[in-house]
Length: 345
Image (tube, rainbow, N blue to C red; front, side):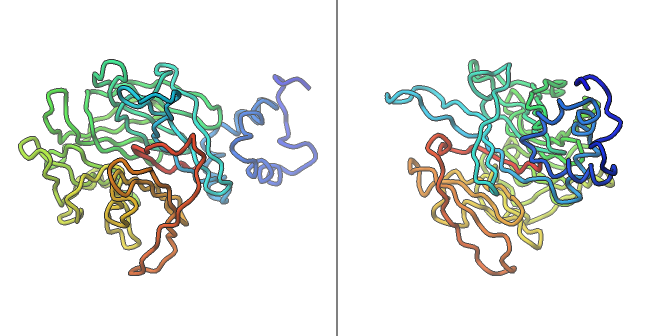
């Protein structure tokens, strides 16, 4: 049987439900090769239904996707801004890897780009052109099954340092600032499948340098500041209820005066915490990625100190302090982490 011929059975001689269970147990790294077996396997492995079946049956794998500085190739003192790439860390196997560069930006990711994940795909959006530092509206989606990047419809307007979150195949953005450094209250949602943008109702306040977090069925926009109060971060947050399509403000949600970007943690009771204030070892440049049973936390003890990588167990009861446990990281993956998110593949 050739590759292009249609296979009537998923696995010859096995009932369909047994064959589906067998394929569900394949590690995601094998999906690209497995999809070449026949047309039916290709259709199945690339389908949304197969992803959700694997998720429901517990065969997806949570990994940390990190926007991380690449190591300097020469021994000379680095000149200019560092180059960034997407690092993937599988906490179960302990394997570190890098996603292939975006074809449009082969020498490094756009500066300060935003990342989020949904349905096993990675979304990279916005940022600044690494050569000119001009704000860009580019949107890219990476499929871990095919290991390919797809360029999607541009963001409707240029904005930097905005909040971003993704759920159910949709990507939500809000706040940030425009090209004139004016803080924004506007918000949009991007549907990956249809490649379309839809404007959402505005938030009640402008929020520049805010952080986006999906908690349950809500998109939270944490802290930020308005145009006239640059650098003075709000204690409030606004959440967009995905079920009703309405915004709701939450007072005293952010108990830190620090910038919330990349360092927002969520406690068991839903309260927001700041990773930068959780331990002296991650006081500077903290970033936390919740991987389910534990959280990957990165940061430095002080400006210029080596970047550390730690695990925090999430199984502690509310009120108990979880200690940071240092983990060893290969030298090529020890660079500064600008931001991160959890991808369930």
